[in-house]
Image 1 (cartoon, rainbow, N blue to C red):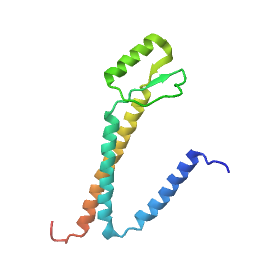
Image 2 (cartoon, one colour; image 1 turned 180 degrees about the vertical axis):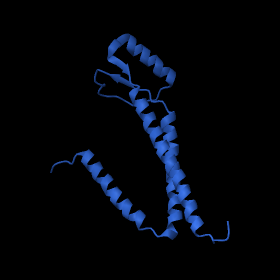
Image 3 (cartoon, one colour; image 1 turned 60 degrees about the horizontal axis):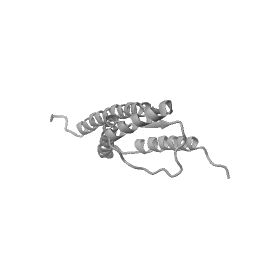
Length: 142
């Protein structure tokens, strides 16, 4: 049996989610629209928190031209230890070690983009919710 390419699989799930989302959203009765928008705003607020973390956190990374050791273990180091390790490796190995800042900038840019989209979604949700609630008010009251 042949394996399916992960990109094709993810693209298929994405397209199916678009169709299911379209039919679910347009199938909602107007009475349920306001609670649905409240849930959407809550989900978007979680996205805002994640995007703020992605924008704020710096991701230091090192790239080695040599292959990693066979028995590598995961461990945590402080920024000061990371700087010391970087300077030691650059001093002893020269051009074999490079600091990768593109991963940090990619994370920050994608986090900023997610932050903007989630804020637009929240603002639009509040506008739509206010408009829907205004439809249920009597004509004479403000």
